[in-house]
Length: 119
Length: 119
DNA sequence: CTGTATCCGGTCAGATACTG
DNA sequence: CAGTATCTGACCGGATACAG
Image (cartoon, rainbow over all chains, first blue to last red):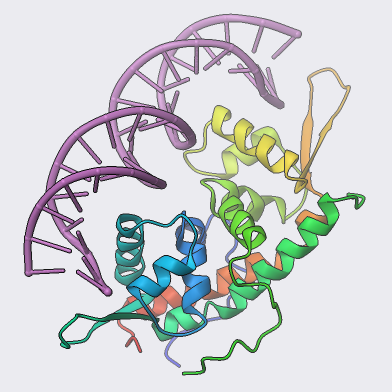
């Protein structure tokens, strides 16, 4: 363990890292792509058909973003009808608690919006 | 690599709620605004000066979005030089674990990107 | 099957100027 | 202080067509 990594709420003020991260995750389609990939390795076409209204071009772009961010790993098979698999890197896999937290919150949010009292 | 989804939330597949939530949180400026507001109630100008490169117009728009999403509460004082305070609703306050999870992950991410080995 | 190249149209960030 | 109105340009999503 090479660094002092005492995070959790200390660096939440004006942290450009947090900023970059949340906007990357929230960028259109990325949330859903990650959601699918956290379920395991998937092929290009599997991703496309798993996500409604997502086109080839869009999927390709987002996958590139995610790959160059070090979140997704791309593996090309040398088989004949080419197959490409995508999976989370281990950094990517560590998004699990994040995605879970968001999923949990979104339920609270929805409940509150449909009749709950606020504050 | 586990193929089975064995975590808390059961609705992470193709859930439009999750989708909406993550894009709202990841929308430009919103992450940072929430970050500041989780530290407590703030005035308009406090928010603006706390966040770099954020203009009046942008802040105003995002605050409206957040308010109509039920995440932020707006309070106008009837004092003379008007004062407006913004604070999180209780739904908004429940974003704390989400923001913490993202902050934690962003540190992991940064560490990994600057020399770490990926998967 | 798995992409890339290109174009187009809408949207939104950002600037400026103005209001209560 | 706390916004709103408006305009413009850049960027991005989406579609189509094509390539390896």
